[in-house]
Amino acid sequence: MNRLYSERHIPVLLNEVVDNLVWKPDGVYVDCTVGEGGHTQAIAERIAASGGKVVGLDVDSEVLQIAERNLEAHPNVQLFKFSYVELPVLLNLLQVHKVDGLLVDLGVSTYQLKAEGRGFSFNQDEPLDMRMNLENDLTAYDVVNTYPEEKLADIIYSYGEENFARRIARSIVQSRPIHTTRELVEAIRRALPYKEIHGRKRHFATKTFQAIRIEVNKELENITKFLSFAPDFLSHGGKLAIISFHSLEDRLVKHAFKDDPRLKPLGDFIAPSLEEISVNPRSRSAKLRIAERV
Image (cartoon, rainbow, N blue to C red):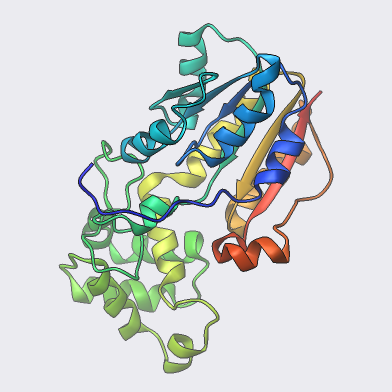
């Protein structure tokens, strides 16, 4: 691993996840988005004394190396490089038919945001990449530089909920070729009125970057596919926990939990406390939803 990185990821809603997900001390749990291993470690520690096990998977090979180091003292954890949409394949290989809990954290890890060269953040000047799986072919560069203007505008509007999507798409096309995150930020800046650049609560490029990242990683397609099969792999009483960070994801999860006869939602969503937000500001938009297999 040759990318600079030093900041440890803070797992979001850690106690809330463990308290709601872990109901069977000797059960089998799957962390479908291990990241740097924070949630996985807490689950493993909760069930270690009773013989419980955790299977962890992540599509990002670099972040998985960090998780392996962070979790090497936990023999009840097994880690695999798989996407959560490949969960049926992995469980079949492991000859595991049912699990007692599934966790998906749909956020971007601190490593992906902070390490050099990944291109997720507009705060650093980097090549346009944004791939969570570095083996995938499609990059942010491809989306920004090859998509037709109309398609680019539709993505920015639909996935970023950006009202100035058509102006931004036009500016991007006129600025091509765009090689770096800084060049992309400047193309977005040229498209927006002064009050939008300086008056928004969040950085003016946030929505566009989110939209491109979702497109590159097929995030909404993946969570929709996962929600279609995940309940089939839960034991009776098993828990499905999903942490989302924007309304598009949360809407999919909310409706799936409500409409799926295999699941019973356990209350409304759980949000981070003010104390957690003060320690970890990136948690402020997180929503945790829990459902039970019936």
